[in-house]
Structures are given as structure tokens and as C-alpha cells.
Length: 366
Image (spheres, helix red, strand yellow):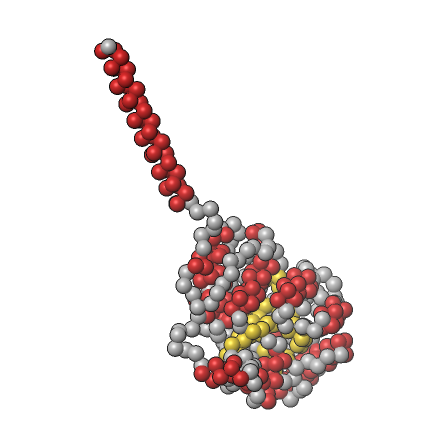
């Protein structure tokens, strides 16, 4: 009997221990489930004035270019993308009543007090090979950001027309212009499909001696094809992409050389494409009073520089500022540019060094 009681005690103790172990296991499982969400953690649920959709990757992770480490976690990409909208969100009391009235009536696009950011790109490649190139992933993300933000992308010609005619209400209060310099073929192969997906207009600034030279250049036929699609405009970027401020050694004279580079390149574009060329884009952003005078007294209506800053009703159309979008441009920095914000010292140094660079040789990569 004594032995039987001992067995019963051990049996009861064992059952109690088993029950405790099962409860502990269940609690541990519950803790794990709470600590490890099944879905990517949702940074978009944070309070924001603008609705942001959950970003899905639209390019291979290997194409990400904004850091040296390409394997950026999806959660980090979503958070960075969402946080960039905080740059755009205005304070509650910052709404312009003139813009609100314009929206109600529908008579005009803007209040007449616009702030436009002209963006400057160069090349598109996966992965980027130079500081001037960005990946297809970054460009797609930037275009999606513009689409999600509701900031309208307008043609360069619309902005120029508003500045030259002083009809400022034809421009939305917040808008962006996309420009791409040089004429690399990767604009046709890589950037074009992304722009068309969003129905965004763009302007290419081409230096004519480079077009249809093979290798990394676009052809005249490819440019004609895009013009026929109705979303592209063309500006001149000179004949050979020289530093126009360097006057010594120009043949037959500095004045005649300037005319050939500035006016002659525009004539070549018109002859090949049969389209008006409203804008001239300074190579390296460099110019002097002589180059400025040639541009102003030609058929051009505007000139593009590389000086960063927003364009507004007081901007000289022959000194249009642009924000350079380079490989190091994060989505938050992009948002600051779109807002017409300031740039840092590192950016200014980069632009200055580029302006002091050697004259460009035609690229051979695509």
C-alpha cells in the first residue's frame, strides 16, 4: 500500500510537470508569434498627411545603387520611401488660399506663385558605373515617388512659356521638370519605359556630334521614335560638349566658335528632327557673358544651368537652375530636391569640380 501511494504521488507530480511544460510551451509560442510578425513591418502606418502605398521592388536588388551594400532589407526600403514624404508634408497652416480657390473653380492650374524643381539626369545603368549614372531601380523609385506625391511632372516648354509670357497660372503650384543630358542610349533603353509607364514628359539635352556615333549614343531615328510618342522634348547641349567659358584657342574666332556650338547645334537638331528647340543646356553648367549673349540673341527662349535651386516667377529663363540626380541621391534627398530645398556642401563641391573638368569625349558604353 505504501509503495502504491508513492507511485501515485510520482504520477501526479509527473502530470503536473507535463501540464506546466505544455502551458510554458504555449506561452513561448505566443511570445514568438508576437515578436516575429508574418508581414513586413509597416512603416506606412505611421501618421502622415499623404497616403503612401506599400512599395514593392520593381527591379532586382542587385540594381540598387544608393549605397555600396546592395542587399538593403525590404523593410528598410519601405521605411525610407515612406519617410521621404515627411519632407513634402506641409504644416497644417501652410495652405495657400489662392491655390485652394483655383482648385475649386478649375479655371486655372495654379495660383500664379509656383515653385518648380528641374531635375537633371545623365545616364542609367545596372549597376551604375560612374557617379553620374543611377540604376533603373532608383529611377523607378523616384518616378513612383513623384506619382504617389501628387506633384505634377510638366514639360520644360510649359515652364518656359509661363516664364516668358508671364502667364504663371498655367503652371501648377508644385511641379517638377525632368531633363536628361548628353544623349546616351541607356535613356532610350532604360529610362524611357519607366517614363512611359507613368506618362511623364521629359526633355533630353543632346550634343549633336555624339548622336548616331554608335556605342553608347542614341540615334536620330530613336529620338524621332520617342518624339512620335508625344512625351519627349529636345534641347541643345552644344555641338561637341565643350566648356563654353574657355575662350582661348578657339577657331576661327571665339565668337564664331560660340555661334557654331550654340546656334549651329540647334539648327542641326531642327534639321534632323523638324521640331522647335526652345532651350539650350550649358555643358558643365559653365558660361560667361559672351556665351550668355549668344544664347539670348538666338532663337532659344531659355537656358539650363547646373546651379541647384527652385524655379519660381522671379527666375531668369536664361539661367534656369537644376538639381542634379546622381548615384548618391537617396530618396529622402530626392524628396528635398523635389520640394525645392537646399543642397549640402558635398553636393556643391561635386558640381564645382565637374565644372572645372576636362572637355567631354564621346562615350562608347551603353
